[in-house]
Length: 359
Length: 281
Image 1 (cartoon, one colour):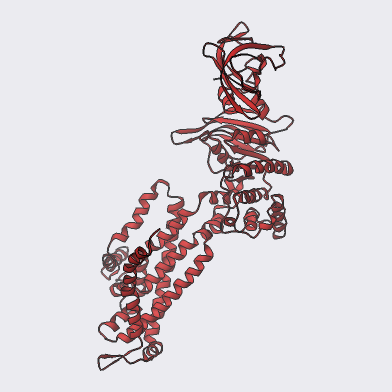
Image 2 (cartoon, one colour):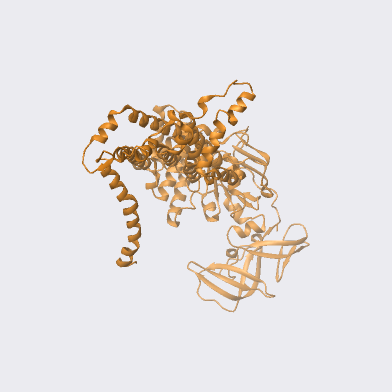
């Protein structure tokens, strides 16, 4: 497995011109560089997630697209037209805010109708579209209620209806599920995905929760320190992380440092054939890609090694082992639950699962 | 929790305070308004004559109307000054917010009398304003109606009460979550529409509180008319003062006070009702 990280997909396959183009966008707040030259395309109908820790710049990028902030450099285009020069109220973009931002002085119906009224939609049309939007989020019976009387999940639905009723080209969602409790969050996640398929609107979703990103997205754009680490489908980003940061942020991994010389990678006691340039190298090896040799079917490019089990943590359906392969080289291994293990065991992994990553 | 004895002990001082300084004076005032003065002596003879005099004498009714008119003008002008000021500070002042806020508050530390005399100096016939107007050859002789007129009273009271109107409005505006403003623009409302549909309705409690301050305080003011009002700017509180003082007709003064009290209390009652309608928590 080589370091083939340069050819990342930038647009979802099979799409024409991208709906949104972010071109070398940078943003500073005083001396602080929050975004450093971000370029990103979003295809029409796509569900793209901006994933990152707090302070990674994901919310800032969202606010640049919504129009609440101005980029310091670069440009944003939607359907080919400049977007970043328009004030927020002239953009065909709607936002679902983190704490919903429902108008407390208006009831649910008037909250949902707000956008249509602001754009002077015909009165005869407003009623029907508001009802349709409320039906879509199953909130018809609360139409006359004030937002303060609703639960978090219900407010969330109203916020979605209020944005979707305007039929935006692009819907921005700023950590919309983070204020909900865990059960409700999982439930809303499913509903959100179904809703996106139903309306066919492009969703740009911001979250710090990698599980949420994996479950919802067509593609994930991982932000770190104001720069894009990787943009890829959830499977791609998990199976072939481009950088050490990506590999560690999405799921768990073993980062193995070593050297490549003459088509062979040497990392401590482990050696396996690789194709790629010589030099120092860093590999990501997922814990679940290392079965016990006794149970695993040996792949053609199998790498066998023996190790002493230092720690075994029972996790219900699986066990997490810390294995010392000698010279204090510790690998974390996840295997199906198998009962207590001890002493030296033989493990195996496929050389193709050791992914060479950038620092 | 606190024991009953403790609760009883701590509630005694405030109850005494309210009893002696609020309820007792009001009761006395109320009683006086139904008594009479005969041969320069107060007699405890229950009657309605004070109220009859009050309603039939065009001077009292006229002054009461003028007072209400002045108070309404002061309210209007201090809202027109205070609201935009509060709005600017809350939404657009940026880093200068703290400084500007202090500048609005500073006049409150200056004695009311000093500010009154300042206006006398500015508006008088040989005052600063008249001197300036003549210097510019806009007028050739001093403009007389600047001082000792209802205009001067409205001007001075507006100057004094604008910070009182500003403060609650500013507090209400600061309370509006900024994402609501962003949500409004996000939904396609222009800044103007956002102001009328979101910011103004949500600042209504502050606006009502400010307006009530300005109106009620102006209604009972007697120093401004005394300093800059002149005969044409006399307000109802001046009449009450002279009835209790030089005229020695406490019963009539008390009956006017009762009328002012009724106006004030019903106004407070109304704004309370309105305020409930405009609060959403």
